[in-house]
Image (tube, rainbow, N blue to C red; front, side, top):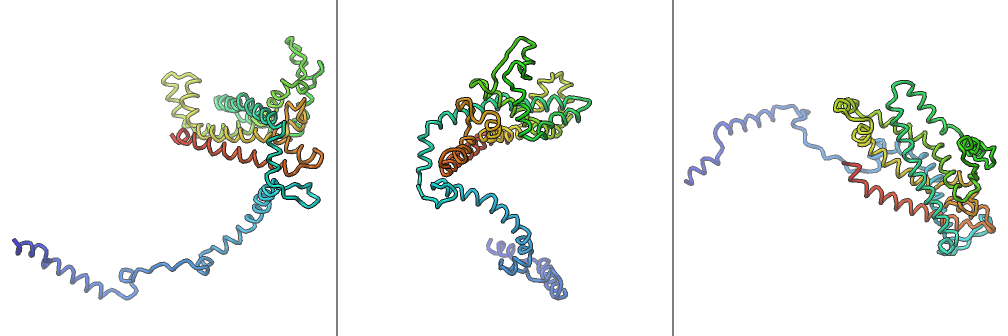
Length: 340
């Protein structure tokens, strides 16, 4: 038994010959043959090696971008964080006050009303403004003729300067019976309405104009996403006898899931920072009914007595932290749904 195991472990004559031939061939190969060259260990990363590999060139090209980004993006953020702990009017020397600015914001009686107004604007924009671009994009994608014309008409409000759009709608919202909207509603026996002068109607009026002004850009995004839907799926749905609603629900919506998630959180962030419409339409009135967070920040910094820049920056930081936490929670909760 031992002899048998020893014979099995010893190399055979054929194996010895193959090994010998390999050694002879290796000896006969020229010195520069890659097969005989030893494996080189790559040198360790040194500054000279990094520069020779193009790192210095990349840094030279990227340095202007980094400087511009740092000066115009990160430096204002750092300055705002520092200013939120100071009392300053931007002319005299700043005084360090710690958390007093945040305490003043939390104890201000306007804070609850401002939060309710901002949340009310965001909710109205979400309920009425979020579905409108989606419905418009789906309807335009079903058109067989003049699709480009309707796309241009949908995007036209985005091209109009925001200030011009607000002034135009302010003319439409004329509370007199001769106003544009009151005249149109008078044809069916409605009105006249005060629109911007009424506390209950002021915020919906702002949302209506903001939806009209911003829907066109979202429509173009949805139309671009609809192009990626395979037409074979629609053909198969038609063969199965699916209605337009079923095709939209079972074919279109699943393919737009990722885009819908992004546009939803972007709309929430945008509506939480609304400033232009309340500022130009009502300046926060009537009776603070349209005073939003960003408009209050502006009033604290530039229109209040004493120029409370510290409190304004503190309120801005609180809004930024809230939106950051909301975005993180939103992406965490919708991660599985967006990837499935």
